[in-house]
Length: 315
Image (tube, rainbow, N blue to C red):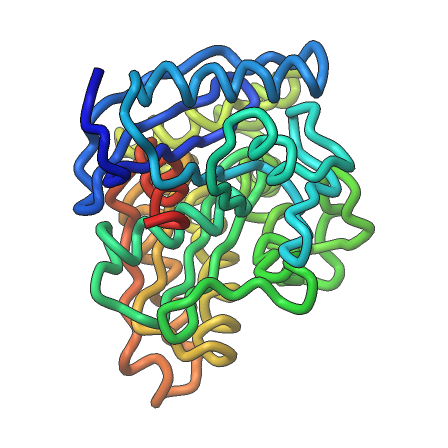
């Protein structure tokens, strides 16, 4: 049934549609993988299904612990999850509940934090001790590594880079955020739509204007694929999103003086169409000594960052 010595850990990445698991050794080699659809029917149902997934992927192997990356706000002092996005994990001592179910050492962190940790240990920022990561998707997540350690803030809710204000008069942010002009409103899927509306207003005869007039906001994936295919409107949309990202990067470069800034998430699939204007904008705004040591690079680990980063919490 497997190695009886506690040389392996399980990393769990909890998402809104699926829960992914990986059995990982101390060299971060993936020994086994599994996944299940996310049980959103109830909190207990989800926790039970996650525990079952851990046991299934371990397949009898003796574990030294389990790490979890959650789409959640986590009080790092207690391991209590205060709130979550798209999953029914709310106001629960997650670490305690999983220990009760599994009898193992449990480590828990936000999904963007564990992605940052994975990229720093074995991905695009490997070898760096000062790292900032942005994950651009439906929302914007962030992770910060300082002196080789994840930054959490006073109670664990730090590194909310998506809620850095880029434009004080910008669009209303998403979800529970009371702010305007956050990076999340300008560089997430909603930010792509916002930039597309601007381009459409400036060119009422263009394809984007036609889509909006027909009552169909262009899909983010369609905009990105169009840009990659050379569509001028799509390129302009990604340029604007990239500039907003560049402002955020310059702020982090000035505050944290990172060696590497990693850009991940679905929006980052635009590649240099996003990163080139981001680098240019950041380079114009950041303090020169800080910027001189910073690289802005795409994430390397893709969908494996979550499980590998969660495993990093334990190894």
